[in-house]
Length: 304
Ligand SMILES: NC(=O)c1ccc[n+]([C@@H]2O[C@H](COP(=O)([O-])OP(=O)(O)OC[C@H]3O[C@@H](n4cnc5c(N)ncnc54)[C@H](OP(=O)(O)O)[C@@H]3O)[C@@H](O)[C@H]2O)c1
Image (cartoon, rainbow, N blue to C red; front, side, top):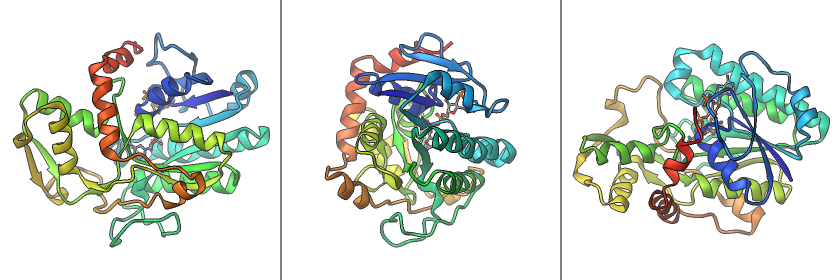
């Protein structure tokens, strides 16, 4: 199959492209960061261009996965207009153009659409209540895709892995700082379900192969708080756990409001798939093996 990936330089985009290339033809869409990626790259800046017709007509993909977004929460607070263009308008326009051509589409959304006040795990039936501009625009993006192209897959995700910049994911944050002997804060009151980005990539491809449609939570099967996540990364890499200082997110200087409980149920995905969803420790092992094999250096060599 031919798979077109928007946001191919992003944390998900680059890892997804490399994983998908094993069995499929990959075309990445990028606004200029990628230089020597081992797949075809189309250059487009989505602030200037939402005309996907020409791109889809020339690339002729069977599948599209939309990983392009303004995904930095504090940047979204500072630039709500840009967040709207990328997280809402782009999603809607791409859904419309894929629908016209019957191209199967996955649009990426976030666990952060929930306010985090539920006792227990959030299901796809639960009512979202976004707490910041990022989450609000991601929810509007979901709604725009669903209204435009009901057969599209909308995947609410949370993941970690190695990125082009080396600084994009929470696992890299702990790895970098602890590796350099610096103290870091670990939030004890933010619970989430992180999935290793390569597991996520495999899941997304399998969802396309199984011809699923509609809304899914695609996260790790284990809920963990961010402090413990840091401890687990430290242990796996043999770094100092005592440099991680437990604290409440309420005492942090982050701009965008964060939800406390983002424990997400993966019951729908595992039922529709008939597969077990990979857990955090298996993912962390994969992340560590990539490190031993020089994977972080390999992906960084693909940027300008
Ligand atoms: N990371 C997580 O744990 C997480 C959690 C929940 C949901 N998600 C969702 O998952 C998806 C992927 O996230 P990510 O972490 O991979 O994000 P990311 O690393 O920030 O990547 C975003 C991608 O969008 C591209 N992009 C931004 N502005 C663009 C523009 N004007 N024109 C063309 N491309 C543009 C970026 O290109 P540049 O490299 O040129 O900036 C980058 O390739 C997003 O929908 C995000 O909301 C992520």
